[in-house]
Structures are given as C-alpha cells and as structure tokens.
Image 1 (cartoon, helix red, strand yellow):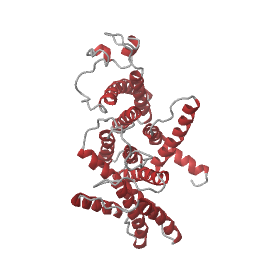
Image 2 (tube, one colour):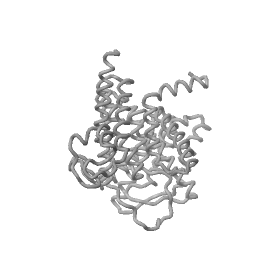
Image 3 (cartoon, one colour):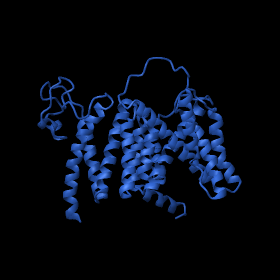
Image 4 (cartoon, one colour):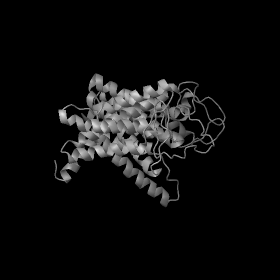
Length: 386
C-alpha cells in the first residue's frame, strides 16, 4: 500500500499544481467575462504572451523571482500560492481517499471550492456556473455511482443545506431591517422562499399525522406562485414577518401537540432550499454570464439591507449534496467559528475583517467532507449519546 501511495502522491501534487495554474485563469477571467480557454495567458502589464517555460506551476515564479521575464513587472505571489494550495490539497485527498473513481470527484470538489473562494474574496460574488456545476456533478455521481452520497441523501442534503442558509438570511434580514419586507421581485423573489418555508413547515408537521410526508408541499406552492407571477406580470406576496413567523411557529406547535418538530423543520428547509435554488437557477439562465458588473452608485430605493448573498445559499446547496445534511451542519459550524476567529484577528491587527462568508464555508466544507463523521461521533460520545 505504501509503495502505491508514493507515486500517487507525486502524481497528485504535480496534477494539482497544473490544475491550480488553470484555476488562476478561472479566478481572473470568469468575473471579467473573458473565456477561460482563449486567448493564451499573457502578462497583465505588458501583454506579452507567456511561453510554456513561463507557465510551469510554482517553479516559473520562483525562477523569475516573481517578475515578468519581458517587462520585469512584479507578478503577484498569489499565483504560485493558489498552485501550491491546490497541489497540497490534491495530495492530501489522494493520501486520505486513494480510491478511483472517488478521488477524481474529490479533486473536482476541491478545485471548485478553491476557485469559488478566491473569486468571492476578489469580487464578493460566487459564480452560479461554478456553484451549479458542483451541484450537478455531485448529483450525477450520486445517481451513477452512489458517490459522494446515495442519490436521495444527496438531493435532500442539497435542498436542506440551501434552505438552512436561505433562512439564516431571511430571519437575519427580518431582524436587521426591523421587520421591514424585502424587495418584491418577480417571478421569483425572497418572499417566495419565505412562503415555501411556511407551507413546508406546516406540511411537514401535518404529514406526520397520516404518516405521509408533506414537507415538499411548500416547494410546489412556491413554484405555482412564481408561475402565476410570471403569467400576470404582478408580484403576489405576503408580508415576510407573517410567513417567517408562521414558519417558526410550526415546529413549536408540533412539539406541543406531540408530533414531530424535526419533520416540520425538514419540510421547512427542503421547501425553502428548493425554491431558493430554483429561483437562482431561473435568474442565472435568464442572464447566464458570470461577469461582475460594477455596482451603480445609486441609493438603495427600498432601503432594505441583505445580511447574506444568495450565492452563499447555492454554495450551501452544493456542499449539502456532497456532505449530506448532518456533515453540512458541521461545516457551517466550522465556517462560523473560523469567520469569528479570523475576523477578530484581522481587527486586532488593524486589517479589513470584511472577508465574505464563501471562503469560510469552503473551509468548513472541506473539513466536514473528510472529518465530519468523526467529529459528529466524537461529539455524541462526549455528551454520552453514542
């Protein structure tokens, strides 16, 4: 086994550095609306097309001492850092999970998270093309190979993961904006996610009475409402305080009545997540470019402040497909903890603590992917439930 792992680790490091070089292109070009495969790589300062020797991952930057060979302009150290990070993570994955074809899926998972993280740091956005590619790849693997999860668990994990973060955003926005309604957009909007959560929560609770799970009913109702909005050109919406308030009431009432509050919560998350992903997919297909446009310098006409972008919602759905919901909870906890620690350190050092949440979610997702089950088992043992 050791004899096999050594050449695999060498290959993984080499292959990972090459993929990291390509990820540098993706990170720079995708938000700029430039093809990631053409034209050839060139110096951003003088425009000189780079030769193959200037594109050797990590080595070229070291040999050239971090400068362009033609114009001597400095080249950011982040380029070799991304290459080295990808190489190290690919190697770690190969040593931890040296099984094919699983390892190929894991490498794709890692590459997508690295690209998403650095783009989010640069632009405060998470490209839908990469997020939905992660969801699609995870569901495809689950359907054909039963990996990274069995298909039912992968699908439910993705829906519940997106629903969890969408409701974080919903309740956080409701409190931060002092119970003011969010912007009403049609045919899909935030209000429909909240409506789906409400119906799903009550459907999940009532489904336990007859032994039939009705939590997904909220997704159906939300899609019907979106279709009606599109057909009439109007936005039909209930107040956010009403829908989110009733959604929160359902699990509590289920507990009081001796029903299952967990089924109510499950219905709430599945419906909210399904509607959130459907809405994001709709808006992306209407404008499939991931180019980041500069924000117009105009006042917010509604005065509503969003506490979390919906790119994070789709990323949570992506992670839920790969991790399953239980391990996703571990990943979210790690992300929140890491964000708090890094933000505190940056504030103490006088730096900018405003790092978006996407990179923290990616870190939490990677840790949970490899160690989530072990962490859950340790915690259950710690509190005496294992």
